[in-house]
Amino acid sequence: MTSQEKQYTWDQLLDRSAGFFRAISPENKICLVHHGDADGVTSAVYVSYVLKHLIGKFPETLIYAPSFSYDLETESALVMKARPDVLIVLDLSLYSQKTILKNWCENIRKVFVYDHHIVKQAPEYGNLVFFNPRLAVEKNISHPTSYFAYSLANRTIPEGKRGEWLAACGLVGDNSFDDYSELKEKTRNTYPFLFEPTPDEDYVDMLHGLTYLTNSGFFYRPDTRTNVSFEVLETAFRDDKPEKLFDKSIPLMDRAWQMYKNFQVDIKDTVETAKTQGKFFDSAPVIFYRSKSPHYSAGISAGILSAIFPEKVCVLTYSSENSDKTSVEIRAGKNIKVNIPAILDKQRNEVHFFSAGGHPTAGGAQIPKGEEDVFIETFVKHFFSEDPRPQ
Image (cartoon, rainbow, N blue to C red):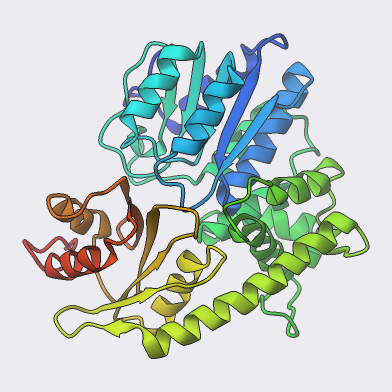
């Protein structure tokens, strides 16, 4: 089986995905790499249970990619160290990581990738199964990875063991839950308590609470390799009891909620400081701020800022003490039309990117530490050049 071909429908892609997983042998050594945010980690839990149901085991190696790890160098080294027979990659944009993907395909027997980010065409390797909904026959679909994994579970896991709440968590995290009315209604009917208002909390209801909890485990001090988000979700999914996530008498859950609490304080501090100390450009509707947080709150903080300033594009940077790289998170307000990847493409002759890309209104990049000024100056310079904004 080779890479995805455009003539396949979404249902056919799901059938082929199920076929790939059914063909995995219990003797195969499996490595699963996933993005660590809510969309990525929920899909990792689903896929782990698909494997458990089909071949009786979880992946031997589970690796999550922090949000700042756009170049995947660390993750690639961990994959090669694991020496798997089968590699499964979820919710990571590998289109620009051609060297890493080539290395994996040349050294691993079978490689499966589900990626819903913008791509121009599927990579071509004989042992690679690459699925992206944007390349399906149907137009204008970009199903998040959590929805793919939920759909895969529907084809492989018996009724009653699919935990719609888990997909809901991932879709809320990817800001797309409202696009899936059937799943939303089924989740509401099966887990009504998740939709109860929580006026005394920072989140509007329990579903958003467990999504924020998941993301906190991912963003909290991202230089560590502890996959707390997977652990808490897998514990609740095991018995299909999302209420476990709110039971602080369970040490694992109490630990996760302490991380959430600390992370929320950090986000508020970052946003308030950015509002007063950020640079507001006159030549373009851009706000720039260098985050000083020990946690990776840049993306969430940029999103909050873009809600406060809906006519602006908010750019925040982050770098850990031990890194020689700076991560850039970019979020656009709802009242401005912009194509962030197009601007990033125009900067490539002036800025060294380890990686860059994303969606039209939400993107990111990784650059050498110390080049933050060059990045923001060229970003502003190219904001209007050749009108990169979609019409």
